[in-house]
Image (cartoon, rainbow, N blue to C red; front, side, top):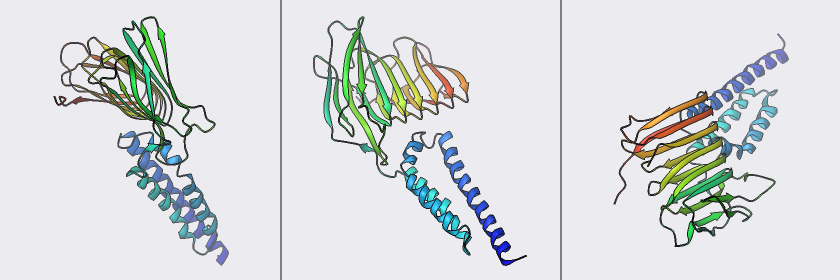
Length: 299
């Protein structure tokens, strides 16, 4: 066998090893995601590391036909190190722009309200707690362009509060850890219907001081924690789409009934008691809902 053929065979072996290790790296992080140890929004943050893929591809091109083909192994090692850095915290999530105060007036004679939040890669911090008289919602928001806003309309005896993000060519920042963000207080004295729809949204919704009428999460790769109060009547919580991960905190002893429709949707729930229950519906593909009994709130 000629020296050139030997080099080609050696390069092919190292190339196969590089491809195999790279698949193992991605497979390991996908396993961590499917087991709930990483949120699905992790993969949107991973997109911001695309220059690492270019560096890895460059290493392969340089050394594939050289006398040092084993250097190609640095490509999956580099990619794996970048994903480990991101999984361990990477760059802390922060707002894309300066914080701006936001509020929504409370229309007269409404008996309930609905909060709609839509968008990509949003960071949500919503809490049911007292707001100033005459308001439904009060707080702050931040985005890259500063064009986000709150719109209020009425439908019969219900107020509908829409959190609007700016319309941009690029729907999210290509910098890791940068998000459009909302920090809002929601009046706790009216029943609330919550509708969250988006891609890659994350954050917390704490409604344990309020009243819940219904909650819906739609979209893909959303990762949210929702703290619910004791239901006054049977209440539906819907999670629909693909690869959503929702953690529900409920008062101890609250009954939970689960319904799944689709492919590999799961609802983990504690044993319930008597009285009004939460009806958790999971529809779509590989949505995960974890129901946890929350400790009693501090007085």
